[in-house]
Every structure is written in C-alpha cells, then in structure tokens.
Amino acid sequence: MSEILHFAGLRGRLERDRPLARSTSWRAGGPADWLFHPADRDDLAAFLRQLPPSMPLLVLGLGSNTLVRDGGVRGAVVVMHDPGAALAVADGLVYAEAGVASPKVARLAARLGCAGAEFLAGIPGTIGGALAMNAGCYGGETWGHVARVEVLGRDGRFEVRTPADYAVAYRSVRRADGAAADGIFTAAWFSFVPGDAESARARIRELLARRIATQPLSLPNAGSVFRNPPGDHAARLIEAAGLKGLAIGGAQVSELHANFIVNPRGAARAADIEALIALVRSTVRERSGIDLEPEVRIVGETATGGAR
Ligand SMILES: Cc1cc2nc3c(=O)[nH]c(=O)nc-3n(C[C@H](O)[C@H](O)[C@H](O)COP(=O)(O)OP(=O)(O)OC[C@H]3O[C@@H](n4cnc5c(N)ncnc54)[C@H](O)[C@@H]3O)c2cc1C
Image (cartoon, rainbow, N blue to C red; front, top):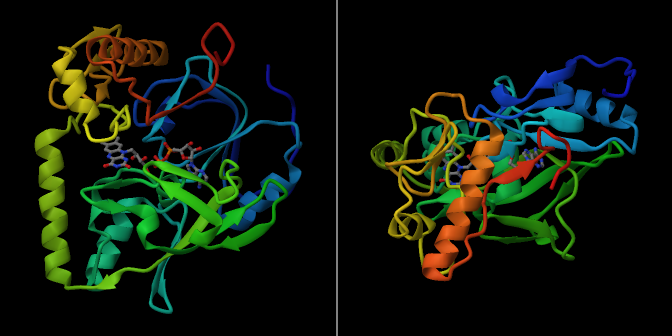
C-alpha cells in the first residue's frame, strides 16, 4: 500500500498506483506507487521540492530501454516524455528539453541543414533517455554533440553542466569523479556541424530503411537487450548459440534480430522477459565463454516482492 502524500500547486498529473506497462516499449510490468507527468520543468522542480527525501524516485522517458518488473516500482516515477516539450534553435545550438522525442531533434537538425544528428531519427526514446544512456548507432553518439546540459537535483535546484563534468563511454554516463550520474536531465544544447538539408534527410531515410529491414519494429521490444562486447556483436553470439526464436511465456528472442526480445502478443510478463534474458546470457556464456552485459535497465520488484 503506497504512502499518502500531499502536494500543493502542481500543474501536472499525479496519480496513485498506476500501471507502467503503457509507459514502457515492452508493454509489460507492474504499477508505480505514484506516477507524475510534470506540466513542465518548473512543475517537476516543485514536485521534487515536496517529495519526501526518503521516497525512492525513478525517471522514465519513453521507457524504450527499461524493463519494469511485475511487482512495480515503490515510490515515485516521473514520466518525462512530453509531446509539447520545447525544441528550438538558440545561438547556433539546438536546444531540446528532456521530454522531446529524439527523432524530432534529428528532423529539426536536418531542416536546419546540419549534419551528425541523423542517427537520432531511429532511437525511439526521449532526449533525457538518450543523455542518460549515451544512446547511439551507426557511428553517432548522443554525447558527441552535447554542448551543455541542464540537470535538476533532488533538492529541486537546476544546474548547467558541460561534457567535462561527465565520463562518457559506450552506453555509459557517469560523473567525471566516478560517481553515478546524479540528477534528472531536463534539457540539452546540441552542437551539430554544418551540412546539407537534403543529404541529412536522405541519410535519415536510409538509416530508417535499414532498421525496418533488420529490426522487429512492429512488435513491443526495447531495442538491443545486451551491450556489444568489445570486438563482437551480441546478436551474432546469440544467433550462433542457436537462440533465435527461443521463448519463455509470452517473451521471445526475435527471429529477425537476435539481440531483441519481443512481446509478440503483448501478453508477456516482465518475469518472462527477465527469465529469457538470463537464459540467453547463461547459454551464450556456456557456448562462447563471453558474458553478455544487459544494456536494458531492469527496475522494480518481482510480483512476489523484492528487487533481487
Ligand atoms: C526499436 C528500438 C531501437 C533502439 N535502438 C537503439 C539504438 O540504435 N541505440 C541506442 O543507444 N538505443 C536504442 N534503443 C534503446 C532506447 O531507445 C535508448 O536507450 C533511448 O535513448 C532510451 O530513451 P528513453 O527515453 O526511452 O529512456 P527510458 O527507457 O525511459 O530510460 C532509460 C534510462 O535513462 C534514465 N532516464 C530517462 N530519462 C532521464 C532523464 N531525463 N534524466 C536522467 N535519467 C533519465 C532512466 O532512469 C533509465 O535508467 C532502441 C530501442 C528500441 C525500442
């Protein structure tokens, strides 16, 4: 049973015991004790200032890299995705609030005749999620283009930081001093090099066509489940281990792309997906000696309680 909380003056939507399956691209998982959709960044700051310091807090963008366990998430979950979030050009930089869907940044940059943002067109998350994950593909990475970011602390205060404040690597973003990245990304300023609008649009079309041909985009999934190990591809190792098509409950290793797990009938429990992740990992370890590390973030409690 979730704790009773009282907030004053919020303009966003605050709901109690809300299912999160619709807030993740796998369409699986249990409820949040408290689910907050802030009206804007100031509303989010007001929420954080009133949130009891002991209450756990989880941030989601579009949930396209997250598995929420069936028992749900204790405490508060903030959903950042906002179709009305600001996206603009300022002093030659592209300014995007964290709730902007990443493909919108790719399209704006192309319209402006910039090059380098095209890779974001196929990443179905938010800018906040792209910053947290250093999302990337086809040779591009989010932090390769960041000029500065705005971060909101748990105390409700905003701070502007630069890439020098972070140690950024493949799908990994930490503070430069080695601590885990703290705070919520609320906005970013991106710098893209001058290019040509038509070439950028053509590149976006080409990258999206490549995805449609190689990824099971019509079925609920969360992109690549495992990080690529140095010098190899997780998909190749999973396929070589004969695991394409393997299913547990409603979850299945994609026939099209072995590093994707799909939820074809929308009926998978998060426990099915997590068990399949564990089975793929142990089988690949047995067959190739390589321990694949999950790229997806697993959060929350199992249906029987406990975060494991
Ligand atoms: C079909 C498909 C294809 C994909 N292809 C790619 C790809 O090519 N390359 C790639 O890198 N990824 C890919 N992904 C994975 C995913 O889209 C990216 O990681 C994306 O950037 C996640 O964004 P999100 O908003 O959905 O994040 P979420 O899944 O909501 O969150 C991911 C993590 O970021 C944290 N987070 C989210 N927002 C914030 C914020 N504002 N401040 C601080 N922390 C935050 C969350 O707490 C969580 O830990 C793919 C996914 C799908 C479904």
